[in-house]
Image (cartoon, rainbow, N blue to C red; front, side, top):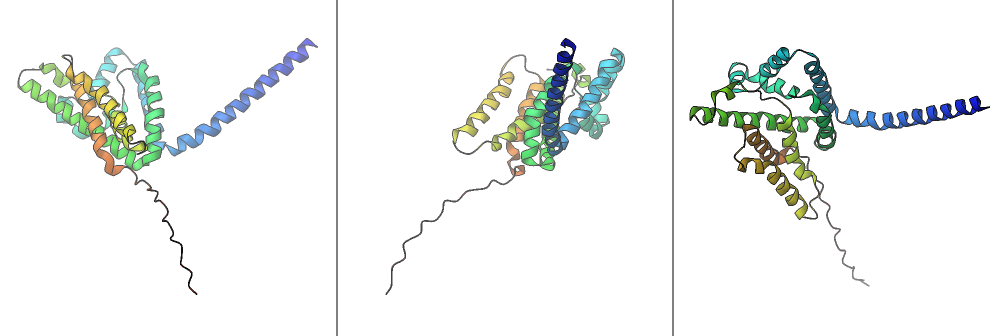
Length: 241
């Protein structure tokens, strides 16, 4: 009798788990299909993070430097490194956090903008912020304010594109109440601009702030909003005999 009850309980648990799995799949599949760019990017990051996690430290350092947008690689292979630098993250352990950011920030933005416009904002922010920050590094080295070793540093990751999307999402917020957009923009400016005021600021901090501003100026890439017009008041028609 006890064995029968245990078997029945296991069947119930199995059925509940099966129902939960079907529910998750029914929600996840349409979500992934509606944001193909975000999840394809995540898949590439997952594969590359797995590679960095299992290779030797020497090979890991080679891959990171070879795919970085530092001054040396930008001068030798500008197009290649501008593309592939956005397909790696420096620390494989940070993938879980980036997965969360992609689902919370990138995926809603892609659904709102469409894959093409979303990709245009990401690419513009990533390339623009990289060139601005590395130009600052070059000037700092030229005026002997930065060490020459920064020309070979690791400059890799997806944060510039992510922050650019944070900027353009300002226009995703409703226009009413009016202060909402301004509060969001002010909070973003404060969060990414504050590190530039300290003595420990880096070229990455400049890149983040630049990509935020680039996201702000990508208003033209946002979909046109639907303006609801108030119905016209109908004047009562005069009765004519």
